[in-house]
Structures are given as C-alpha cells and as structure tokens.
Amino acid sequence: MNLPIQATTPPVRFSRCARCKNFAVWVDGELVAPAVLTAPPPHQDLADPALASYTEGRGVFNASPRAAAALLRLCLQQLVGMLGAKP
Image (cartoon, rainbow, N blue to C red):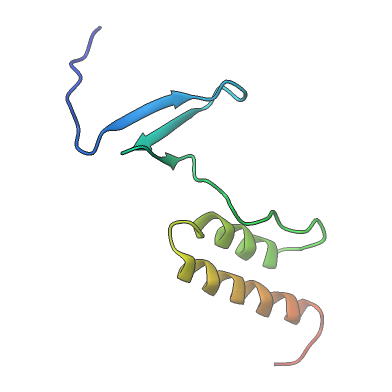
C-alpha cells in the first residue's frame, strides 16, 4: 500500500541509527526525538525518590531549563531528607 506523502512545514525527516537501529525524528534540521540528554547520568548511589526527580529533570533540561532546575531542587531536598537533615 502506497500512501501519498504530503509536504510539511517545517520539513520533517526520519532517520535510523546505524548502531541501535532506532528511529529519529528531525524537524527543520533539529533532532526532536529521541530527546538529546546533555546532563550527566545520575550517580549509582542515588536512591529513589531523588533518582526519579533527577532523571525527570535530566530528561526535560533541553526543552525547559527552568523545569529542570525545579526538579533538581526537589532532588536536593529529597536527598537532604534521606541524609537525615532537618528542614
């Protein structure tokens, strides 16, 4: 079955990674999926719930640095609480 391809604005392109074989979506020459993670991965000793907050903040950093900052602050609050500090 051949489906008609319509021109889109901005141009959308798809590619496939030669290493992992997953697809990527490019809009107007910029990679939009999968998300590019520029923040470092979490430390191996970071435990939940701080790990979940850090991972979420890491995932949204490129789209919204303010949201990432809020999530990283939450991560720090959770970490300080796990270490036994009083508010």
